[in-house]
Amino acid sequence: MTYDRCGNRTDQNQTTGNPPTNHISITAATNRITGDCYDASGNLLPESAPPCPSPTYTYDAENRMVNYLSAAYTYDGKGLRVNKASGSTTTVYIFSGSKVIAEYDNGAVVGSPSREYIYSGSALLAKIDSSAPSITTRTISPIALSPIPAATLSPSSATTLLANPGTTPPATNSFSLPTSVTPNPATTTPWLATT
Image (cartoon, rainbow, N blue to C red; front, side, top):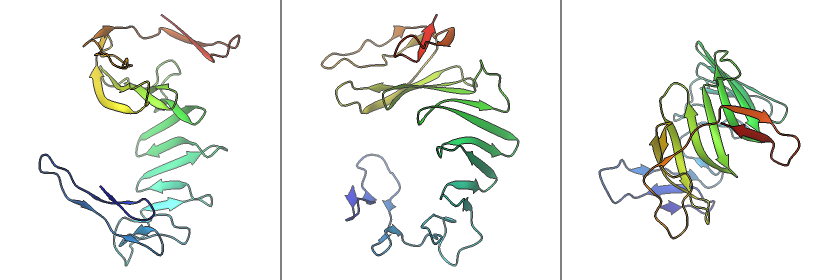
């Protein structure tokens, strides 16, 4: 990969398969992609060369995207996107700190989120999608805490979620999802999961 003086990736060379070429030019004076359109605050408008058509992206006074094509976004006081309305689908986002932990589509009941996310520190370990019969997981190296390729597993059996340094993880492990999650204010652990 090749980077410019500001750290923008300008080229990516892949050595296997027939990938498409990946090259962009950055205007040094503005640190923006050459040929794209931006507003006065530096927000990307449509992804097309000038003369720019009407904006594809619309931003509020705090430079947060509030519209993209047919989608509209709503933010809370902390600047976190809490709602997305696109066509006939409305998605509500639930956060723990700055991380999305659940998504509810079109008024899904509280106990049945459309998607759930499980983290270890800042690393995403798993995404549970109620519309799919599987859980997408990431294996995390405990030493580097960098993602290793994702795996997909069924709820009844799983590949190892955490790798042990210097050992080969077993191909599958049994696990069960919690049947309830309740607030646990008596300890420093904010939630208690039970099966």
